[in-house]
Length: 98
Image 1 (cartoon, rainbow, N blue to C red):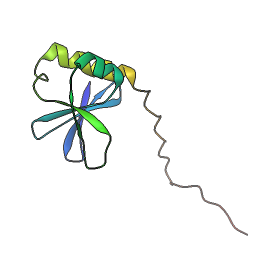
Image 2 (image 1 turned 120 degrees about the vertical axis):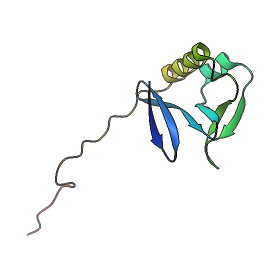
Image 3 (image 1 turned 30 degrees about the horizontal axis):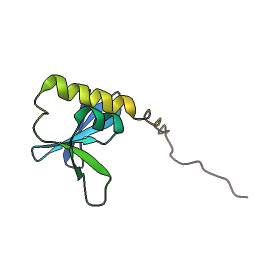
Image 4 (image 1 turned 135 degrees about the horizontal axis):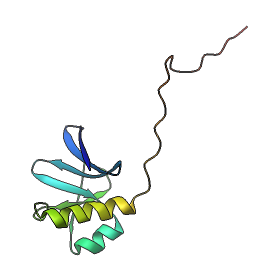
């Protein structure tokens, strides 16, 4: 698990995959079918207007075992992160024109 400040809120990563955001005393967990089965009845909300729905975890995020299991289930059901492009010195390729 790791956390990084992003867009003015905290993003939680599990195995390099973004799985949750924390802001304004709210926890939003990425929506997955496996997560839905684990949680049961769940409230959904948007991270920002027009975004895909996320699970709103209002009261159980303080239950350490339950919350860590939810994040692990979510991470396991997401595809692996895409490899990052290398940033080589010099930037873009330069083409010579004769």
